[in-house]
Image 1 (cartoon, rainbow, N blue to C red):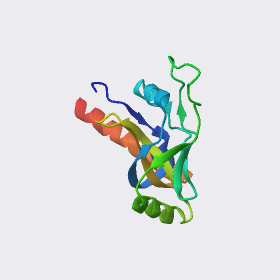
Image 2 (cartoon, one colour):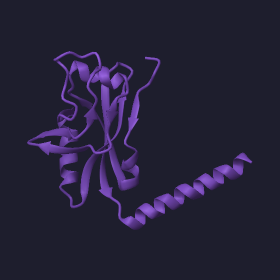
Image 3 (cartoon, helix red, strand yellow):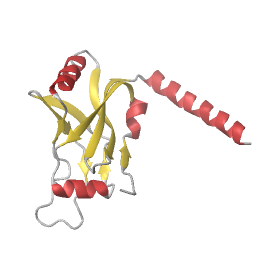
Image 4 (cartoon, rainbow, N blue to C red):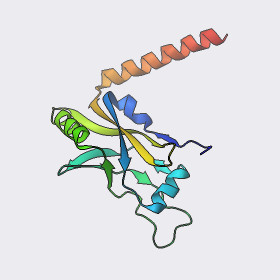
Length: 149
């Protein structure tokens, strides 16, 4: 595939401390993968949660496929994430701790053409942590400008 699809959740790194990352497959339909290959997805408000022993992603928007007929998918439906049992158990025990959650950080299509989702166990940042992140970003930008001149 010449054009690589990487859809990032830009708010994730700003709003959360990303502690541990996992790569999961997704159970999706035919029109969803076609829409993903066009790059029409949004991870901004998405989050993951356990229903029984299974992990689902909620509120992830995949736009309807433009050439789809009445078989088109629902844009914000819940999608099952595919991980092995050991990883699921590890994620479940970590999220039982107070203040930890599971958020999607990156949606990509691998070399085999399968849609994969990178999820992270995260802890929410406080307001002063966000200010610190912005300050670090500004100083890095100034240093990079200084090197370019």
